Each structure stands twice: as C-alpha cells, then as structure tokens.
Image 1 (tube, helix red, strand yellow):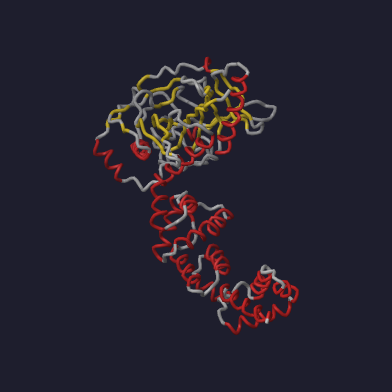
Image 2: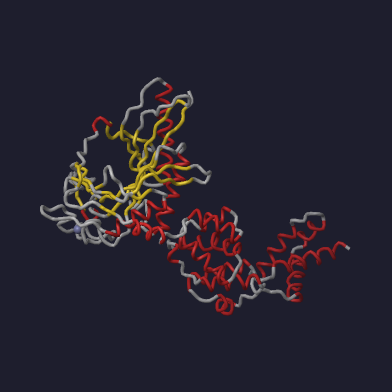
Length: 477
Ligand SMILES: [Zn+2]
C-alpha cells in the first residue's frame, strides 16, 4: 500500500520584547530563579494584566511578513487548565479571533504552505524535576508571562524535508523581523508537528498524531521519519493509528506515546474579562507594514541578480541578516562580490564558528575587508596570504596594510627573485623534473607546492606557474 504523508507544524516563538506581555518584568534569559516576577505574572489574586503594545506590534510584523490578514478586531481568551508551571491555572491566549490569519509561506520549489493563524499568548514557567532518589520538582516563574506567538500551518507539508525547510524559512523570517531570538536550543523557538498518513487513492485524511519535544531541526526530521515508518507499518498490517500525543525520545531515537487524544481536556475558553478587546486602526497596521525589512527570500533573489552570486552563495550569505548586511557593506566599499562571498563563506564563517560568535558580532570592519580584497586583486598579496591576513584582522582588528607590513607579507612578483627559487627547486627535486619531462604534468604541481612553502605563500601564483613551465620546457630541448 502506498501512502501520502500529511504534516502540519505548530511553532511557538518567544518575542524579543524588553518586558513581559502583561507586566513590566524583564524577559531576560538566565536570571536567578523567580527573581523576574511580580503579582501579575505570579497570578496573585487581584493583580490585573495590561497588554504590552510591543508584543501586539511584533505579532503583526510576523503576520504581515507571512502574508496574513490582520484582524481589525481581536481579543484575548482564557485557556483553563491546571499545571504547576502556570500559576493562574489558566493561560491568556487567543481562541476564535486571532490577530493574524490566512497567510502563507512559499518553499523554494514554489509550493505555498498555508499559515492558518498566528496568535498571541503568554509563556509558562519552567519545571525542573529531581533526578536523584529524593523526589521533588522546582518551578521557576521567570519565563511565565514572556510573550509568545503561535504560528499554525495548514496540513500542507508532504515530507520531513519540506517540514525542515518550512521551519528554517520561518526562523529566518522571524530573525530578519528582529522579533525573536529564534534559538531552538534555548527554547525561544519551539515546534510541534501533526502527522497522518492516508492511502494515495483516498480523499479523507488519516488519524493524526501530535509530536512534541522536537528541540532541533534534526529531531524534527528524525521524529517525522520515525512516525512515517511506524504509521505505515500499522496501516499496512490493517491496524489503526491511535489519535495521541507522542514525544520524541532523543536517546532512544523513537516517538513514545504520552497521552491519548481521548484524555485531552476541554479548555473551557472564554474571553479574558480583565483585558479590553484589541481594536486596530488600519493606519497603524499600514505603518507597521511600511517598516518591514527586505525579507530573506527577496534578499537572496536580489543578491543573485545584483551581485551575480550563485544560488548557493546567496542562500548562505542571506541566512543571517547581519551577515547579508556585512556583505553589502564590503561591496559598497570595494566591489568584488564573488571574492567577498568566497571569503565570507570560507574564512569568516569558519572563524565565527571557532570563536562561537554570532553574525552580529563580526569583529572585522567592512572597509578593511574591502581593502584586503583590493590588495589581492591588485596582486599585492596572494589569496593564500590574504587568508592569513584575514585571520589576523579577525583576531586583532588591525588594518590589512598594517598586518602585511608588520609580517613582511608581500607578493613576490619579481621575475629574477622567482627564477632563483624555481631553479633551486628544479635542482633539489630531480625526480619530479624527470616525471614531468616523462609526461606527468602533475609533477609540476608538487614543485609549485615546494616553491610556495619556500616563499611562505608569497610567490605570485600565476607568474610562478608561467615561469616554472617555461623553465621546465627549456629542459626538454
Ligand atoms: Zn511580572
């Protein structure tokens, strides 16, 4: 039996507002437990919430970027349930009138994935369970009341790869909008997946399971793979898939049932009586629309068109907003897009990774970087010396000319000087010379390597190759 896979994602993103959604407590990550709380976010009796305007604005930014309709009239609702990380025994969320609805996100293949809704809600606290023999749990309410948006896709994703691409694109867009840190490892971006299978000749959808604890792109992909296999084996054996919530177990690399859907409680939603409805002026929404930045896909297309970058380069360089801005600043100073892109993808990203720096923390000045590319283009230094200079610029912040001067890096483009080294190499490596004369062209490459080592990478590579061939050809006569 063959099946179609139907996947929908529910993504929660913590909004990067300075304060919580209904009080003035800070949203900073990593404070000592329960130091960032007040009567409102602790749910003490009589404390009244006040909606954070910035959180509403951020939710609208996400909605506009994802081509949603923004509701002129919307409200907050109480979602009632008891769990120790939720001090009020209800979460303030949005039920039937979300701020944004009916948008879409386009995958690279052109497929549109519907965004059913984006709504605003508050985050819960964080529980820590003891692992020792003494059993207890601790609760930290610093995170309680941090604003969240929940982005719900239509059941339009057909493969784990599409789900990963959708989530990557979403993460990029939220990062460009500067409304969320989007760190899956720290939990500021979280993802649940709904997945069901149906025989390809049938219309109605199969029974779905909901997958939780997908803390990385890899976990999302593997959990979906696992679930496709599990469900298709059940269906092929004539058994039913149970409607249930399952959790991805990273250690076991499998999904495990945590509760069946029949146990799902009724949340008894009702309008939040302590908050007035949200009524938005069209001019206010238009103002936010005007302030949206160029989005990642548009930027990528423009980088391909305006800078002539290959798709691979354009994709990587626009993967982070600050990296893309850095690339443009370098080219505004000295225009050589492909050379800039090669250095960014090779050297810069490697060094950032080694130092665990974000693209917002690039320690090199774009103008100095442009100067370095110019020095290479003008033949002052070779590309390989350029890489060494760049590493020093990255560590010290010094200008390329200073480093070249201090280290004595200069490209050797003087024929006499080069010929001396070439002839020495020919004399020192008679076997390679014999090989070359015997028809093994590759032997010349070994000699080039020796000469480069001898000159500490400073020989002008093109001139060196020309001269070496000329000298070797002379020996043939
Ligand atoms: Zn508070």
